Image (cartoon, rainbow, N blue to C red):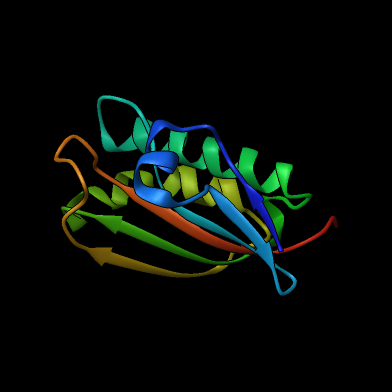
Length: 119
Protein backbone atom coordinates (compact mmCIF):
# COMPACT_ATOMS: atom_id res chain seq x y z
CA UNK A 1 0.00 0.00 0.00
CA UNK A 2 1.21 3.50 -0.83
CA UNK A 3 -0.15 6.86 0.32
CA UNK A 4 -0.06 9.98 -1.86
CA UNK A 5 -0.18 13.38 -0.18
CA UNK A 6 -0.95 16.65 -1.92
CA UNK A 7 0.42 18.64 1.01
CA UNK A 8 -2.93 20.30 1.68
CA UNK A 9 -3.43 21.80 5.13
CA UNK A 10 -6.41 19.59 5.94
CA UNK A 11 -4.60 16.30 5.35
CA UNK A 12 -2.70 16.52 8.63
CA UNK A 13 -5.50 18.33 10.45
CA UNK A 14 -8.21 15.80 9.57
CA UNK A 15 -6.00 12.71 9.24
CA UNK A 16 -6.27 11.63 5.62
CA UNK A 17 -4.25 11.66 2.42
CA UNK A 18 -5.19 12.65 -1.11
CA UNK A 19 -4.92 9.11 -2.45
CA UNK A 20 -4.11 5.54 -1.46
CA UNK A 21 -2.78 2.92 -3.87
CA UNK A 22 -3.97 -0.50 -2.72
CA UNK A 23 -5.36 -3.69 -4.17
CA UNK A 24 -4.69 -2.71 -7.77
CA UNK A 25 -6.60 0.57 -7.42
CA UNK A 26 -5.95 4.22 -6.66
CA UNK A 27 -8.56 5.57 -4.25
CA UNK A 28 -8.65 9.37 -4.42
CA UNK A 29 -10.27 11.22 -1.50
CA UNK A 30 -13.18 13.57 -2.05
CA UNK A 31 -11.66 16.66 -3.63
CA UNK A 32 -12.96 20.22 -3.76
CA UNK A 33 -11.53 22.89 -6.00
CA UNK A 34 -10.98 26.60 -5.73
CA UNK A 35 -12.93 29.16 -7.71
CA UNK A 36 -15.92 31.46 -7.67
CA UNK A 37 -18.48 29.07 -9.14
CA UNK A 38 -19.22 25.38 -9.63
CA UNK A 39 -17.58 25.27 -13.08
CA UNK A 40 -14.28 26.73 -11.85
CA UNK A 41 -14.33 24.49 -8.78
CA UNK A 42 -15.08 21.40 -10.87
CA UNK A 43 -12.20 22.15 -13.22
CA UNK A 44 -9.80 22.75 -10.31
CA UNK A 45 -10.89 19.63 -8.40
CA UNK A 46 -10.26 17.54 -11.54
CA UNK A 47 -6.79 19.11 -11.85
CA UNK A 48 -5.95 18.08 -8.26
CA UNK A 49 -7.32 14.58 -8.88
CA UNK A 50 -5.31 14.25 -12.10
CA UNK A 51 -2.11 15.25 -10.27
CA UNK A 52 -2.78 12.67 -7.53
CA UNK A 53 -3.41 9.93 -10.10
CA UNK A 54 -0.23 10.81 -11.97
CA UNK A 55 1.79 10.70 -8.73
CA UNK A 56 0.31 7.22 -8.21
CA UNK A 57 1.32 6.14 -11.73
CA UNK A 58 -2.22 6.16 -13.08
CA UNK A 59 -4.33 8.65 -15.02
CA UNK A 60 -7.80 9.95 -15.73
CA UNK A 61 -8.31 7.38 -18.50
CA UNK A 62 -8.03 4.65 -15.83
CA UNK A 63 -10.84 6.00 -13.60
CA UNK A 64 -13.47 3.30 -13.13
CA UNK A 65 -15.75 5.03 -10.61
CA UNK A 66 -16.54 8.66 -9.83
CA UNK A 67 -18.85 10.22 -7.26
CA UNK A 68 -19.97 13.83 -7.55
CA UNK A 69 -21.32 15.53 -4.44
CA UNK A 70 -23.09 18.88 -4.73
CA UNK A 71 -25.17 20.92 -2.30
CA UNK A 72 -27.48 21.88 -5.19
CA UNK A 73 -28.15 19.31 -7.91
CA UNK A 74 -29.18 22.12 -10.27
CA UNK A 75 -25.52 23.14 -10.44
CA UNK A 76 -24.45 19.79 -11.87
CA UNK A 77 -25.52 20.42 -15.49
CA UNK A 78 -23.04 23.30 -16.04
CA UNK A 79 -20.24 20.80 -15.26
CA UNK A 80 -21.29 18.29 -17.94
CA UNK A 81 -19.03 19.71 -20.71
CA UNK A 82 -15.97 19.63 -18.42
CA UNK A 83 -16.70 16.06 -17.32
CA UNK A 84 -17.30 14.90 -20.88
CA UNK A 85 -14.04 16.53 -21.98
CA UNK A 86 -12.14 15.01 -19.04
CA UNK A 87 -13.33 11.44 -19.40
CA UNK A 88 -14.04 11.43 -23.15
CA UNK A 89 -13.72 7.95 -24.61
CA UNK A 90 -13.08 6.46 -21.14
CA UNK A 91 -16.23 7.26 -19.12
CA UNK A 92 -16.35 5.75 -15.62
CA UNK A 93 -19.36 4.52 -13.69
CA UNK A 94 -20.76 7.60 -11.95
CA UNK A 95 -23.01 8.70 -9.12
CA UNK A 96 -24.21 12.21 -8.22
CA UNK A 97 -25.30 12.89 -4.64
CA UNK A 98 -26.97 16.08 -3.41
CA UNK A 99 -25.64 16.76 0.10
CA UNK A 100 -24.06 19.31 2.37
CA UNK A 101 -20.32 19.90 1.93
CA UNK A 102 -17.78 20.86 4.59
CA UNK A 103 -18.07 24.60 3.80
CA UNK A 104 -20.81 26.55 2.02
CA UNK A 105 -18.24 28.08 -0.36
CA UNK A 106 -17.72 24.67 -2.00
CA UNK A 107 -20.14 23.84 -4.80
CA UNK A 108 -18.83 20.40 -5.83
CA UNK A 109 -16.71 17.61 -4.36
CA UNK A 110 -15.39 14.79 -6.54
CA UNK A 111 -14.11 11.36 -5.48
CA UNK A 112 -12.64 8.78 -7.86
CA UNK A 113 -11.32 5.24 -7.94
CA UNK A 114 -8.93 4.30 -10.74
CA UNK A 115 -6.98 1.27 -11.83
CA UNK A 116 -3.39 1.46 -10.62
CA UNK A 117 -0.54 1.52 -13.11
CA UNK A 118 -0.06 2.94 -16.58
CA UNK A 119 -1.97 2.42 -19.79
